[in-house]
Length: 195
Image (cartoon, rainbow, N blue to C red; front, side, top):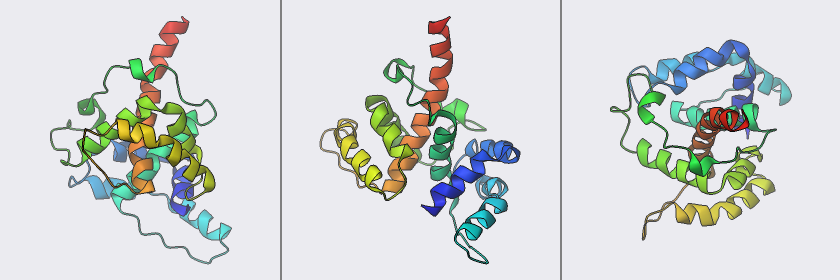
C-alpha cells in the first residue's frame, strides 16, 4: 500500500515527469537501469509518507523492477482513472516494444516479453476489470473482487496447459503497464473517430 501511494506521489510531481519517463524507457537490467531509477525516485514523496505515518523517518528499499511495476498503475490512475478504460482496445494494432525502449527491445530480459504479452492480452480482454484492479487500493476487498473478476481473462490469456503463479503486485505491474500504454495508444484512434 505504501508503494502505491509513493508511486502516485512521484507521478503527480511535474518536476519528476522527465526522470520517470527516462526510467520507464530504460531497458530493465541494463547498466543504466538502476541509476535512472534513482533519478526517478523522489525523496519528497518519501518524506510525505513518513509525515502521514507520524514517523520521523521512513525508509523504503525498492528494487528498480518493483518501482517500475508500481509506476505504470500510478500513471494510469493519474491520466485515465477518472475517465475509465478506453473503448476499442481489442481493435488496436499490436504495440511495438522496439519503440518503447531506448536502444530498442533486442536487449530486453527474456522474462519481460512473456509478462508484457500476458498483460496486454488481459487488458484487451477485460479492460473494465483491469481498470477496477488498478483503481483499487492494494490488499483491499475491492482488489480481491477485481482479481476474482479477472480470473476468466487470466485463463484465456494462458496457452493450453500453461499455469502461472502471480503475486498481486506482479499482476498490477503487467496489467498496469499494458493498460497505460494501450490507453495512450487509443487516444489518437478515438480522436480520429470523433473527427
